[in-house]
Length: 312
Image (cartoon, rainbow, N blue to C red; front, side):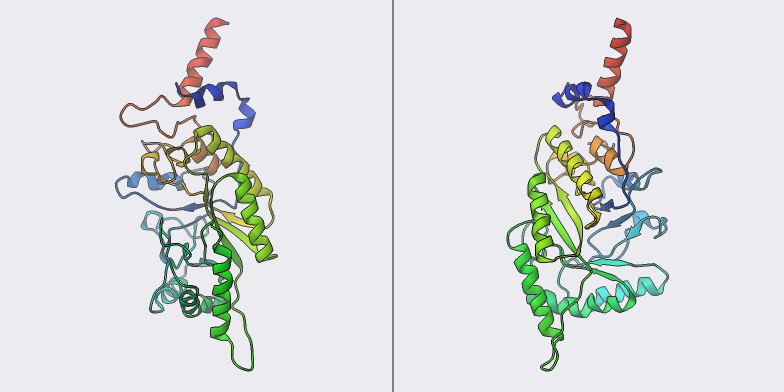
C-alpha cells in the first residue's frame, strides 16, 4: 500500500470533492498507441470547454464534437515561410467553424523540450503575415507562450518592438495588438503566482491564459496539493481567462514525472485527472495499472470501510 493511500484514509471526504470551472481546457498530446484514451476528455460530465493541440487544425479524435461544446483553438507553433496558418484558419471560418481565439508560438525562447526557438524579429514577421490579419475578423490574439524562465518577458518585449517596426512608417508609429498573454510554468505554486505577477506588471490589465503548467517530478501528495492550490487560484482570479494543465497522458508516457499525469498506466483517470474534469475521483494511483502495479487507493478505501463495518 502506498503512503498516498494511507493519507487518503485520514483526510475528510469533503476535502476530496471536485470543483467545476468553465476556464479549464485540454492540452491535447495523444499517444497513437492508446487512441482509446482520447475519449476520456469528452466523456459525459467532463468540465473541459476548449482545447488546443499545437496545430492549426482540429484533432480528428474530436471531429464529431461541435465547436460550441468543445472549442478548438488553433496555434501557430513555430516559424513558417508562407501564410499557410492564416489561410488554414480563414478556411475553417469560411467553412462555418467559429474560431474566436488563436495562440502564438510555442516557447520561442527555447530550443529544448519542445521549444520552437525563434528569433523575436523572425517571429514578428511571421506574426504580421499570419496572425495579425485575423483580428480584422474578430479573432482574439494570444501572444507567444514563452517558457517560465527569466528570458521570456524580455523576448516578448523585443518581439513587440520588432513587430512595431514592421508596421510603422516614418510618419506614423504603430504597435502590434494582442488580446491576452499565454503563460507556461513548471514549478511550485509560489513561483507560479510570482510569475503571473511578473506578467501582470509587464502587460498590465491584459487577460492571462495559463496554457501549460504543472509541478513536475514531485511525490503524489505534493503534486495533488499543487493542483488544488493552483486551480482554486485560477478560478477566483478575474485576470485568468483560461487554463490548461499539462498532463493529458498516461503516467508511463509522462515527461513531467509519473505523478503529474492525469491518466494511470491503463488509461484510467487519476485523482488529479478526475478533479480536473470536475467528476468524482476514484483514488486511482497514477503509477497503477500494467505489470501488476499497486492497488488503486479506491480499493484500499473500500477495504478499510468493510473492515470498519465488521469491527463495529
